View 1: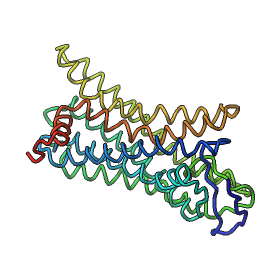
View 2: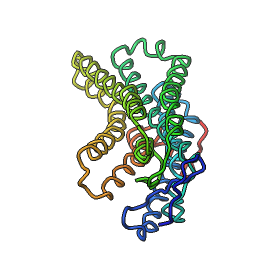
View 3: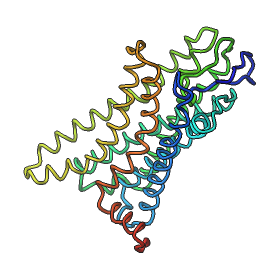
Length: 316
């Protein structure tokens, strides 16, 4: 591993980490990593194209799905450069400015993904609880406003993070724990009081992740209550079936996040490889599997994808 710079100005570099203790294995991880990224990009681009060209998908539910696909694509592209450079080219160093730029985008798009999942839950709530008013409540203007609000909230919440990191001096080891930059990872390397960073990071997590989780929980409690009032068992099943893809997307986002948080808090005795693996799963799993889930679960999307790869006509 290359030596690291211990200067305290903003021209210093951070040293990224591949597989802890096993740098010789980094190259072998690069191949599946490239496959995952290729699958992520291809899958989410296909979802965006299909929603654009398929007129029957020009509905609120699929507009929110397009937002989710765009967010997954952006989140993957935010982490891709350093992860590929570490595992494929063994370029471990990243400049201070590049590092804080990457952490801004990773945290921002992570917050956007959480917000989009809440917006999708609201869409399912309106569709099931107020089916006759669905089109009048979720107009194009409302959908656009929700998307803008989700993006703005995340940007505003994460924007102070680069400035809070920039003010800290780094005079100890600057070896990060992952192949990409995170606020909490860089913060622990500072040789100054980081209580402001810690408190703000906690407040940002509560404002975005915890609040969104509570809203999702309340939304599905209300949805289940509404479904129970449906007389026909077949209609109940049909209503819940429309939520299944979204529930899978929520689990793909929150389960790795919760596991990673628990490991970070209570698993300090575990191998660093476990921490690195869970952090990578949290970042890579949702963008890879969300397109798969929606492609399998949505007949119109599945049909269009088959047409695309079997030479069928795309335009309606």
